[in-house]
Amino acid sequence: MTKYDLFIYFITALLPMSACMLIMQVNPYNALVMRGILGALAALLYVLLGAADVALTEALVGTMLAITLYAIAVRSSLVMRLGVIQDGDALPDSHFGQITDELRRIFGKRHMRLELVPYPNEQALERALLDKEVHASCSKLEQNDENLLYHTAVRVKRVYDIMQSELSSPTTSLNYVDTPELGEGHKS
Image (cartoon, rainbow, N blue to C red; front, side):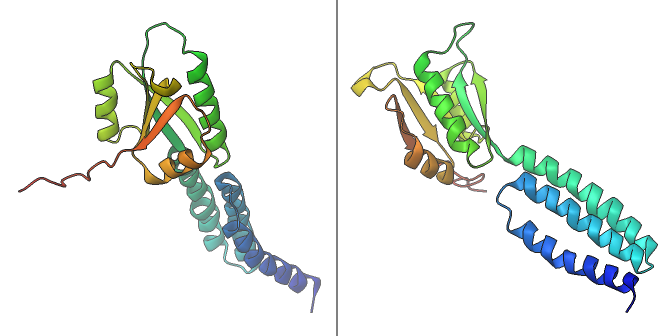
């Protein structure tokens, strides 16, 4: 057994270890890094075994292109879109700031970011929620019942469950809105 053989065995042993580390990742960005390492190790092993064409394909397609596409998909899918009423140049009040700060904290733990999407009026905001442009809407209540200042409606059940269990702001009410699937209720 030569040093060259030991090197190949070492690289070969790293492949399943890096694959296991990849599937154990909770943070999707760490998983992207692990996927890059796995692809680089596979390309290196192919080169050492004399399959330069396969190594080049793995390096270009399996590693670089796949990671780029995964990064785009991860970046676009880890957004919680919250629809709000655009209030001209007026600054949001401190209660709304507390709600958004708490939502950023809650979803930040899940590697998500909060994106506020402004709408001109209540009807446009409700339509956006039903048309699935946003995951949730937060609007100011006209009547101040029980010290509630805002109403938050959520159309994604998992997001609602997370918010219900972790949102501690006493200034907002929270409810789940079951949006019909496209084509549901329509007769052809």
